[in-house]
Image (cartoon, rainbow, N blue to C red; front, side, top):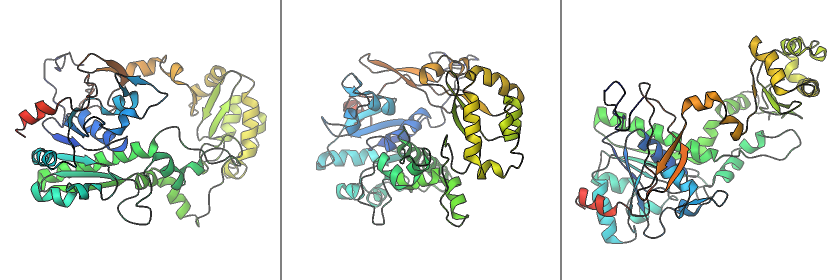
Amino acid sequence: MRNESGDNMSGVTFTKPLEGMLVLDFSQFLSGPSAALRLADLGARVIKIERPVVGDICRTLYISNLELDGDSTLFHSINRNKESIAADLKDSEDVRLVKRLIEQADVLIQNFRPGVMQKLGLDYEAVKAIHPKLIYGEITGYSNEGPWVGKPGQDLLVQSLSGMTWLNGDQGQPPTPFGLALADMSAGAHLVQGILAGLLRRGITGEGCHVQVSLFESILDFQFMELTTFLNNGCHLPVRSEIHNANPYMGAPYGIYRTKDGFLALAQGSVTELGKLLQCEGLLGYADPHSWLTERDEIKRIVSDHLLRKSTREWLDCLEPAGFPCAEVLNWNQLMQQEAFQTLNMMQEVRRSNGSAMITTRCPVRIDGQLLPSAKGSPRIGEDTLKVRNEYQL
């Protein structure tokens, strides 16, 4: 536990692992800013470089039209714990000042379309010439080569092109996207991994590096288990279940089922054991584990009909004591009533310098048992320009 001054209750000051690092965040939208956010949570000082007046386009990228203090809650959630300076990268004087700041930075992050930073004179080779120890992080939509370089790097489009949306939904249903910005968030996480590896190598060799990640490659890596199965199975496409599909490579009873009053998730387990626990005689005839995949839909229909007879809680009371993998399906309101959720302290309040506040999630990482909260909210456009210029003598 930490008190408000940042000290442990034992009186020993806890230092976040990246404290003392300076990160310049030139990125917009979700992927790059999410990477910079995680570095900030780990202790780095993150300064956003934003266009005057307009700033990061994500400031006006609304979710459910929800706004706080003039910016979208999406922007607030992914840009908390950062500072902001305004700089016109098409103005030679502003670029000169930015380059002087880059010379003093440890990490630079950008996710512009391929070629944009080169036109601005801020691509990796140009920056390396003035700061060879810099860790330069770059996120693109589809890498910097190949015929898709010019395609829009948008999460839904990347999900669709990657084959991922085709895996979701039941057989006969149209492809279904995830209800999350999965490509953006996975690319941001991969960039953080690469940046941390680069910082580690720099600590050994003194050399900087160019870390490159694309949304497309990240979402392909997200499917590595399923793609590996596909590639080593004659490239035969998996067949989705006709009902309760959750993973097309998983046999029965894997899926989510309706109960008398809600829903129940069943993970991979013995069908005959499930039959005994549920007192469902129809499942007892499937003793051959091979049939759990070849006769998957028939088994799932039996399970589906049977589970409608009782409530979710009644079924959990049958399955959980026996160790059968299962779970209630919760919405967010139900989740937040759970003691298990409350124990984690996953939510935190962040506040802007003018007092505007919002509740959001904290960093999920713990270091030596310590949580890594931060009460600093997102910055307004150019809020820290004068302070940064004076501090770094720009």
